[in-house]
Amino acid sequence: MSDHIIEWDPPFYFVARWEGLTIYGHRIDSPYEEDQEYMRTLAARGVIYTESFSVACPQGELGSWGLHQVTAISKEQFEEARRRQWSDAPDGFGLGRKASGWGPRSL
Image (cartoon, rainbow, N blue to C red; front, side, top):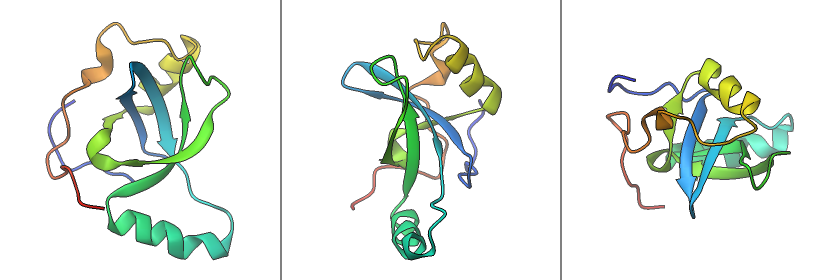
């Protein structure tokens, strides 16, 4: 993946590392209007609301990630990870390389 400003509108697929686990996820929106203000507040801080998966939680869970914590991947890479039951990718999907324009943010 080349360095560029990432498009993080839904579905925005990503991979991240957390406490030794490889986490795969995608950005989601809430269907509830009352959640929209909260999600706009998150987005203004560089945080996305997500559904995330790993070998430890293959059924997925809702949460949030800072954009500085994730690496964008394609839908095809996300689906490949699902087929592997969320195990590590042989090439690591470029973990450690962040798209330019994002960095640690003070929340």
